[in-house]
Image 1: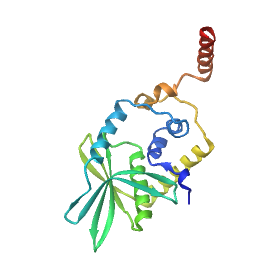
Image 2 (image 1 turned 180 degrees about the vertical axis):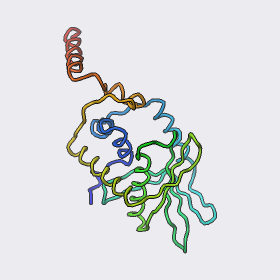
Image 3 (image 1 turned 90 degrees about the horizontal axis):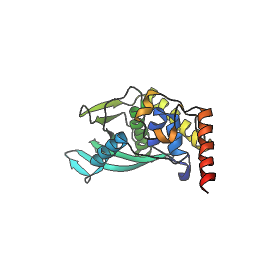
Image 4 (image 1 turned 135 degrees about the vertical axis):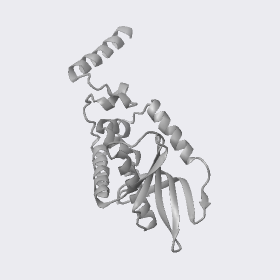
Length: 211
Protein backbone atom coordinates (compact mmCIF):
# COMPACT_ATOMS: atom_id res chain seq x y z
CA UNK A 1 0.00 0.00 0.00
CA UNK A 2 1.25 3.46 -0.90
CA UNK A 3 0.66 6.59 1.18
CA UNK A 4 -1.48 9.09 -0.68
CA UNK A 5 1.38 11.57 -1.06
CA UNK A 6 3.28 8.98 -3.13
CA UNK A 7 0.50 8.33 -5.63
CA UNK A 8 1.42 8.85 -9.27
CA UNK A 9 -0.96 10.26 -11.87
CA UNK A 10 -2.78 8.03 -14.32
CA UNK A 11 -1.50 10.23 -17.13
CA UNK A 12 2.10 9.34 -16.25
CA UNK A 13 1.58 5.85 -17.67
CA UNK A 14 0.96 7.16 -21.17
CA UNK A 15 3.79 9.68 -20.85
CA UNK A 16 6.21 6.92 -19.82
CA UNK A 17 5.29 4.66 -22.72
CA UNK A 18 5.50 7.50 -25.24
CA UNK A 19 8.87 8.73 -23.96
CA UNK A 20 10.60 8.10 -20.63
CA UNK A 21 12.30 11.50 -20.79
CA UNK A 22 8.97 13.25 -21.40
CA UNK A 23 7.54 11.45 -18.38
CA UNK A 24 10.46 12.59 -16.23
CA UNK A 25 10.30 16.19 -17.44
CA UNK A 26 6.60 16.34 -16.53
CA UNK A 27 6.45 14.26 -13.35
CA UNK A 28 9.95 14.80 -11.93
CA UNK A 29 10.91 18.27 -13.17
CA UNK A 30 7.35 19.64 -13.26
CA UNK A 31 7.51 20.97 -16.83
CA UNK A 32 4.51 21.33 -19.12
CA UNK A 33 3.65 23.03 -22.39
CA UNK A 34 0.73 22.89 -24.79
CA UNK A 35 0.80 22.25 -28.51
CA UNK A 36 -1.90 21.48 -31.05
CA UNK A 37 -1.96 17.81 -30.09
CA UNK A 38 -2.37 18.39 -26.34
CA UNK A 39 -4.88 21.19 -26.97
CA UNK A 40 -6.98 18.94 -29.19
CA UNK A 41 -6.87 16.20 -26.57
CA UNK A 42 -7.85 18.67 -23.86
CA UNK A 43 -10.92 19.72 -25.84
CA UNK A 44 -11.92 16.08 -26.34
CA UNK A 45 -11.61 15.38 -22.61
CA UNK A 46 -13.59 18.49 -21.71
CA UNK A 47 -16.41 17.35 -23.96
CA UNK A 48 -16.37 13.88 -22.44
CA UNK A 49 -16.22 15.23 -18.88
CA UNK A 50 -18.93 17.83 -19.39
CA UNK A 51 -22.49 17.16 -18.40
CA UNK A 52 -24.06 15.50 -15.42
CA UNK A 53 -24.16 11.83 -14.59
CA UNK A 54 -27.11 10.13 -16.21
CA UNK A 55 -29.05 6.89 -16.32
CA UNK A 56 -30.03 5.08 -19.50
CA UNK A 57 -32.18 2.07 -18.80
CA UNK A 58 -30.12 -0.32 -16.67
CA UNK A 59 -26.94 1.72 -17.13
CA UNK A 60 -25.67 4.56 -14.95
CA UNK A 61 -23.08 6.82 -16.61
CA UNK A 62 -20.57 8.63 -14.38
CA UNK A 63 -18.43 11.37 -15.93
CA UNK A 64 -15.08 12.72 -14.76
CA UNK A 65 -14.93 10.14 -11.98
CA UNK A 66 -12.05 10.32 -9.49
CA UNK A 67 -10.43 6.91 -9.14
CA UNK A 68 -7.45 5.49 -7.26
CA UNK A 69 -5.56 2.38 -6.22
CA UNK A 70 -3.84 2.20 -2.83
CA UNK A 71 -2.09 -1.01 -3.87
CA UNK A 72 -0.54 0.53 -6.99
CA UNK A 73 -0.14 4.07 -5.64
CA UNK A 74 -2.16 5.51 -8.48
CA UNK A 75 -4.86 8.15 -8.86
CA UNK A 76 -6.55 10.17 -11.55
CA UNK A 77 -9.81 10.79 -13.28
CA UNK A 78 -11.74 8.52 -15.62
CA UNK A 79 -13.49 10.29 -18.50
CA UNK A 80 -16.55 8.06 -18.37
CA UNK A 81 -17.45 4.96 -16.39
CA UNK A 82 -20.57 3.07 -17.39
CA UNK A 83 -22.08 1.06 -14.55
CA UNK A 84 -24.08 -1.76 -16.08
CA UNK A 85 -26.59 -3.41 -13.79
CA UNK A 86 -26.39 -7.19 -13.84
CA UNK A 87 -28.28 -9.24 -11.29
CA UNK A 88 -28.80 -6.21 -9.08
CA UNK A 89 -25.10 -5.26 -9.10
CA UNK A 90 -23.58 -2.35 -11.03
CA UNK A 91 -20.48 -3.49 -12.93
CA UNK A 92 -18.03 -0.74 -13.97
CA UNK A 93 -16.98 -0.35 -17.61
CA UNK A 94 -14.39 2.43 -18.19
CA UNK A 95 -14.43 4.46 -21.42
CA UNK A 96 -11.44 6.64 -22.32
CA UNK A 97 -11.72 9.42 -24.92
CA UNK A 98 -8.88 10.17 -27.35
CA UNK A 99 -8.81 12.90 -29.98
CA UNK A 100 -6.61 11.03 -32.45
CA UNK A 101 -6.54 7.54 -33.86
CA UNK A 102 -5.49 4.14 -32.45
CA UNK A 103 -1.77 3.97 -31.68
CA UNK A 104 0.77 1.29 -32.48
CA UNK A 105 2.07 1.09 -28.92
CA UNK A 106 0.07 0.14 -25.83
CA UNK A 107 -0.13 3.57 -24.18
CA UNK A 108 -3.90 3.87 -24.61
CA UNK A 109 -4.47 0.23 -23.67
CA UNK A 110 -2.36 0.55 -20.54
CA UNK A 111 -4.22 3.69 -19.51
CA UNK A 112 -7.64 2.06 -19.75
CA UNK A 113 -6.24 -1.03 -18.01
CA UNK A 114 -4.94 1.12 -15.14
CA UNK A 115 -8.39 2.64 -14.78
CA UNK A 116 -9.87 -0.84 -14.60
CA UNK A 117 -7.39 -1.85 -11.89
CA UNK A 118 -8.43 1.19 -9.86
CA UNK A 119 -12.12 0.45 -10.32
CA UNK A 120 -11.65 -3.18 -9.32
CA UNK A 121 -10.00 -2.15 -6.07
CA UNK A 122 -12.62 0.52 -5.36
CA UNK A 123 -15.67 -1.63 -6.10
CA UNK A 124 -14.41 -5.14 -5.37
CA UNK A 125 -15.79 -6.24 -8.75
CA UNK A 126 -13.89 -7.62 -11.75
CA UNK A 127 -13.50 -5.36 -14.78
CA UNK A 128 -12.83 -7.57 -17.79
CA UNK A 129 -13.37 -5.03 -20.54
CA UNK A 130 -13.21 -1.33 -21.27
CA UNK A 131 -13.37 0.84 -24.36
CA UNK A 132 -11.53 3.70 -26.04
CA UNK A 133 -13.37 6.25 -28.15
CA UNK A 134 -11.16 7.72 -30.87
CA UNK A 135 -12.03 11.08 -32.40
CA UNK A 136 -10.49 10.39 -35.80
CA UNK A 137 -12.53 7.34 -36.81
CA UNK A 138 -15.26 8.53 -34.41
CA UNK A 139 -15.89 5.10 -33.06
CA UNK A 140 -15.44 3.15 -29.90
CA UNK A 141 -13.07 0.19 -29.74
CA UNK A 142 -13.52 -2.52 -27.13
CA UNK A 143 -10.45 -3.46 -25.09
CA UNK A 144 -10.04 -6.87 -23.49
CA UNK A 145 -8.20 -6.46 -20.20
CA UNK A 146 -6.37 -9.78 -20.18
CA UNK A 147 -3.66 -10.97 -17.79
CA UNK A 148 -0.80 -10.04 -20.12
CA UNK A 149 -1.97 -6.42 -20.41
CA UNK A 150 -2.51 -6.23 -16.66
CA UNK A 151 1.03 -7.45 -15.93
CA UNK A 152 2.56 -5.05 -18.42
CA UNK A 153 0.53 -2.14 -17.04
CA UNK A 154 1.56 -2.90 -13.47
CA UNK A 155 5.22 -3.16 -14.54
CA UNK A 156 4.98 0.29 -16.13
CA UNK A 157 3.36 1.76 -13.02
CA UNK A 158 6.19 0.33 -10.89
CA UNK A 159 8.77 1.79 -13.31
CA UNK A 160 7.20 5.25 -13.07
CA UNK A 161 7.30 5.03 -9.27
CA UNK A 162 11.03 4.19 -9.42
CA UNK A 163 11.70 7.07 -11.81
CA UNK A 164 9.98 9.59 -9.56
CA UNK A 165 11.47 8.21 -6.34
CA UNK A 166 15.02 8.36 -7.73
CA UNK A 167 14.32 11.60 -9.65
CA UNK A 168 15.81 10.03 -12.76
CA UNK A 169 15.70 12.09 -15.96
CA UNK A 170 16.87 10.09 -19.00
CA UNK A 171 19.14 11.76 -21.53
CA UNK A 172 17.56 13.37 -24.57
CA UNK A 173 17.53 11.34 -27.77
CA UNK A 174 16.22 12.70 -31.04
CA UNK A 175 13.48 10.54 -32.58
CA UNK A 176 10.74 11.05 -35.14
CA UNK A 177 8.08 11.21 -32.43
CA UNK A 178 9.81 14.25 -30.90
CA UNK A 179 8.07 16.45 -33.49
CA UNK A 180 4.69 15.77 -31.86
CA UNK A 181 5.90 16.37 -28.29
CA UNK A 182 4.77 19.58 -26.58
CA UNK A 183 8.06 19.67 -24.62
CA UNK A 184 10.29 19.70 -27.70
CA UNK A 185 11.81 23.11 -26.93
CA UNK A 186 12.39 22.33 -23.26
CA UNK A 187 13.82 18.89 -23.98
CA UNK A 188 16.20 19.94 -26.80
CA UNK A 189 16.76 16.43 -28.18
CA UNK A 190 19.63 15.92 -30.56
CA UNK A 191 21.55 18.96 -29.37
CA UNK A 192 24.32 16.74 -27.98
CA UNK A 193 26.14 17.07 -24.67
CA UNK A 194 28.95 19.26 -26.05
CA UNK A 195 26.57 21.60 -27.85
CA UNK A 196 24.35 21.73 -24.77
CA UNK A 197 27.32 22.63 -22.56
CA UNK A 198 28.31 25.36 -25.03
CA UNK A 199 24.73 26.65 -25.07
CA UNK A 200 24.59 26.80 -21.27
CA UNK A 201 27.97 28.55 -21.05
CA UNK A 202 26.67 31.05 -23.59
CA UNK A 203 23.69 31.83 -21.37
CA UNK A 204 25.96 32.55 -18.42
CA UNK A 205 28.18 34.73 -20.61
CA UNK A 206 25.18 36.79 -21.70
CA UNK A 207 24.06 37.19 -18.07
CA UNK A 208 27.53 38.38 -17.03
CA UNK A 209 27.70 40.89 -19.88
CA UNK A 210 24.28 42.36 -19.12
CA UNK A 211 24.67 42.46 -15.33
